[in-house]
Length: 145
Ligand SMILES: [Zn+2]
Picture (cartoon, rainbow, N blue to C red):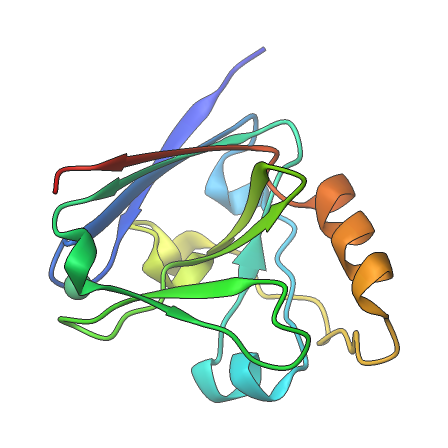
């Protein structure tokens, strides 16, 4: 099976990643979340349960984590340049992730997203189960600091 390593990063490069998946960016199924945070960010997401997310933090002290609502996911942002490249969720000792496609090198080739989804009626159990099924199932974090 072909696999692609799609590179992305925050603006200053403190947060850098590769998203390894079987699809080229032009075939991504792009999702939008209708929550208040994602609406403000104009975030667009992609994941692949059999894919891999390889993250490198140059200075982890400059990596911010924002939680709200049910507080089951961390919106990861660079404290230096403000870009939020992905979201991580830790459950039962395992990390799951989704990529904000705006942070990919090839962001301008990513297809238009589906209409926004509203997940407001999920409880936190439903939410974690959905992420275990749909989000990137293998997350590797390397920190240089
Ligand atoms: Zn940055």
